[in-house]
Image 1 (cartoon, rainbow, N blue to C red):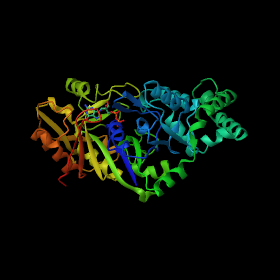
Image 2 (image 1 turned 90 degrees about the horizontal axis):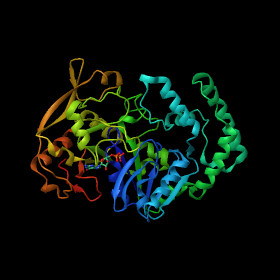
Image 3 (image 1 turned 45 degrees about the vertical axis):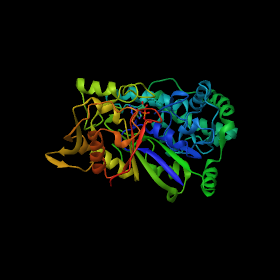
Image 4 (image 1 turned 180 degrees about the vertical axis):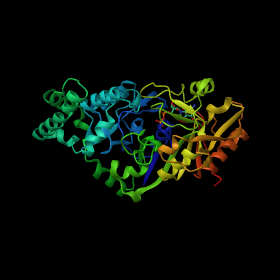
Length: 430
Ligand code: GDP
């Protein structure tokens, strides 16, 4: 059976911790979309890790970690990450890379960087890791698959054609030096040696694993709001962040996904451009305080170190985010962070052009939305590390009940700290 762990919001919900916990009970953990542009933070007995490409099952020797065909594969980054892991004392994990995955090329990163510079103030807040050009090329059919690395004449032909196109942009739009196909070809042959031991037919592997009754965990990156179809377009990423895409990006039957765990934080955080609508945002000194207290060492991007925008829990966005994921249960993270507050505002609806709505709108309307808050009493104490749900202060439990009733998805796990064991399991009331 297949379980998916995905984000209900803007990403950084704490999926890494939940995946790390659930990976232990899984046979296979799969990354099915995105690239090295976001990171999961995992804190376990080996130390603190920010994983960008590797699935979160790498800490368990029994888990096969699959990089699915839907991933934007930066081979150099993947191999570096593996070396870093073993360098920090983690036993070499079982890793399998899809022979159908496509390669994130140096010219994707350059294009991303040049385009952000060209856009200036209108930029989308890209991490400049080449993700948008990568997926554009995939759908324009000029991308290069891992399997192409093992057919040199084909690789050279496809690479030459791709570079020809890029160079028109580089020279005439961006006024930058041309990319050199010959040089990239040589680099790719070197990278091929590094990746070869891991390459395989992950499609057949996964279907076979499911036939044998193995448990497969799909690990999503980012969250619902970043999906190019159902998120806040165009402030989205370029691959689908929804559990449903796992059927394609990992290749598992749609009917095999039985459980979709949507991760959401007890408050909101969002990275990316300042122009992105973030309705429940908290700015000024109060925002600075929440950012400083958030996560395990403040709300700063795991990959970029950029300060994250923070805000109160947004019921409208989260209910929508859970709906489009098809959530069967929700995990609420970072509840411990809110212990310093007397009252906790929760955004329960939006006011758009004088009309109050609890339905998540399309981008033009979202840009005009104002938050409507409900005030809930805080609990004013440190609950960090609490593992017994019933031992939480009554106001903390009431806060969870309130969110659950509003998002309409059973909250089964309440995380009370960044460490794996800091988790209170809950029997939902719904
Ligand atoms: P992901 O991309 O969804 O995995 O999220 P990140 O790992 O980027 O961000 C979540 C941050 O919150 C990380 O710094 C985690 O270590 C931290 N974190 C996760 N769960 C909790 C929690 O329950 N409490 C606190 N204080 N921090 C948490």
